[in-house]
Length: 438
Ligand code: C2E
Ligand code: SIN
Ligand code: SIN
Ligand code: FE
Ligand code: FE
Image (cartoon, rainbow, N blue to C red; front, side):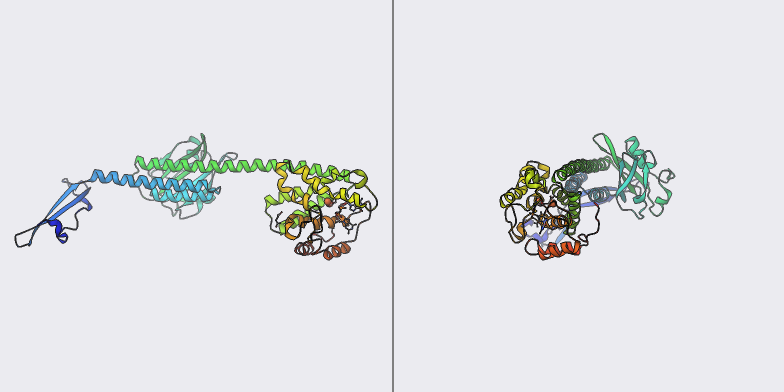
């Protein structure tokens, strides 16, 4: 009968690949490892009794090796993709390097690894991230270019491999660092981005293992990724730096404009500076970010830029304004929009110049916005502006005492002002009448 019809007669080992040791004929030689494919079948006698099992072993070591290699390559590829993702989704170097080092340890089967970053100005290597160390001495170490293994890797721009640290007497590894680590061998790989050394990737082993070419290639592939990550982050830092420089240049320009405005306005000296300072302080209490506060400051400095469009005879009038004059005066918020909106970097700063005369109950100008329709920063600024205006002498009246101004502001909570903002401002100590400096 065909064996196939009696599946239980099959030998279950059939189809398995087994790892076997073949002892060498020469007892001095160790066992050789072979991978064999098992093919076994039972033979029965006439009475359906099992007579014997025929086992055939086919040496598939070559195929098996290729198979493992493919699997390893796949794992390596997956690791590289993972590292790539970590690098592209994060400007946090420590985080992406930690991901990278995890793969270094697992895929390269090493005991410890770290990444050092080269600071080009001080010519030193600084620790960024490490995995697998027993002590934390690497974290605090700063190595000079040319000093130690890492320093040499960076200076010579080449890989250093120390197969036996013991033999080298560890001259270049800090003795203190080695204590408790028991590293046996070392690899240091330079991290090169756009032809420049940006750092060093170090791997440490506590046992002596022979590394093949494939291992070395993968170490270099991971080092190349580390270099890209460092380059990305450095580019980002440089960009941030030039953004900061640009912001400082803008700030100086805007401050200059606001001084010029004050001159024309016959404004109490320092009004603009004071309201800008107070508004930023208060806006911070409301949780605005540093980036938002830059725009808040610019908006406050330029809040009355629209008064440039108000004729002298109205702006400098010593008496109360007529209704027709008020129509013109109120336009200073609209003029501000017309003047500032074409300037791209000031778009986000428009809220204060445009909306600082809007009122909580909707009776303000220019649009009669109501409640939270009014941007938060404009609601904050409105309180500060009135505070400082009343604390100052104007052509048409002299300054009010502190308590009168505080009382006045309190009385306008819910009509002119956002009551929540009034509470926070009056509770803050910022509107307390003491001299405040920028
Ligand atoms: P400003 O003098 O800097 O005043 C800003 C805001 O503070 C005013 O917005 C108002 O809400 C408040 N404020 C200022 N002074 C007084 C005051 O004496 N009493 C009260 N209750 N609140 C005061 P507002 O009213 O929209 O005025 C905008 C700007 O129009 C003022 O800026 C000022 O430049 C001008 N202005 C207002 N009233 C007069 C006026 O009677 N004569 C002249 N020449 N200009 C005026
Ligand atoms: C001013 O800066 O002249 C007063 C502020 C304002 O009109 O809002
Ligand atoms: C702003 O920050 O200018 C708007 C936020 C708000 O109105 O709540
Ligand atoms: Fe104004
Ligand atoms: Fe003002």
